[in-house]
Image (cartoon, rainbow, N blue to C red; front, side, top):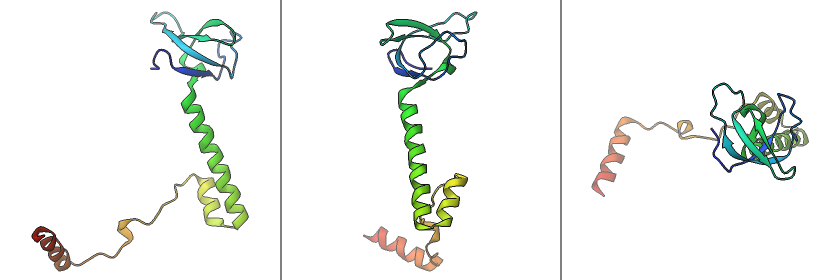
Length: 125
């Protein structure tokens, strides 16, 4: 549930109310009527109007900005992979796999005696 006063963007007009898609607005009230399909009352300052909207028609501005940043990052990685002819990176980006950096599990496993010596040294210090 979105908080009052949050800045939102209108992304859809599912009930064909002539909502200004792509415009910004602010949540000014909740519609708590159980018989009503609308969830929020928003104010669009540019139009100087209030609208009743369902939750599916609006999205937080921060979420949309993050989605756009992720899309741009993916496109940049694809361009870099094509420019450097890095087929492995290209396939990872297209398949949606995360880039895995070297972790501690890749390092050598020490013997039990070395591990006990190391623990005793740390405990002594």
